[in-house]
Length: 184
Image (cartoon, rainbow, N blue to C red; front, side):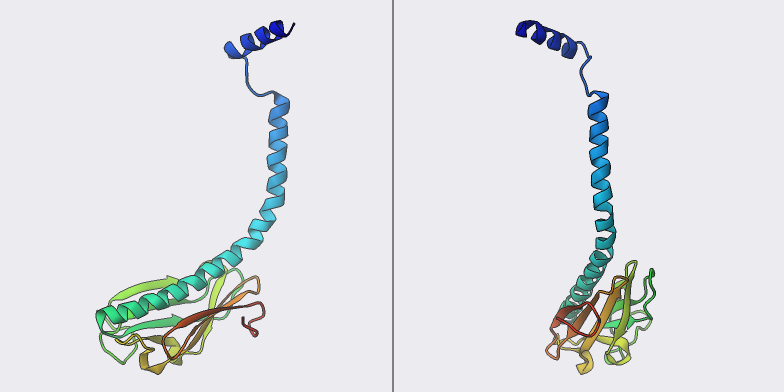
């Protein structure tokens, strides 16, 4: 009897009658639907925090880029921030990194080379800096340009904050907060 069943199974598989049954297909679709229902809210909550953290890391990376370019070019490299009031659902703020051919003026003049132009991603706002004139950078010795040090803060629509702080020695530190007042 086992041999007969094996023979029937082989005939069905060998002649193109194999495949998934409708029941197997429906169970698979139901499992995928249930997993999607569970996962989508987590992804929706996770995405704004991911964008904020990525933007914060980009700020740190661009500070380091400015420092290395100042050393390499033996000149001032300036980061000029444009801040704005936090706007839920929007993207507010940007910054530009440029080689300051007119050392000491800290403004972007015609003909100066732009090394990076960054706009904040969706739901991330660059809302405050405490640099004089929202401008900072590095001199040819990789020290803070014009002795300016301080911090820049960004946030998202989920009440998460990041602060990148530039020390007097030219090092940048990243801190996080859930209220914008207590940093760790």
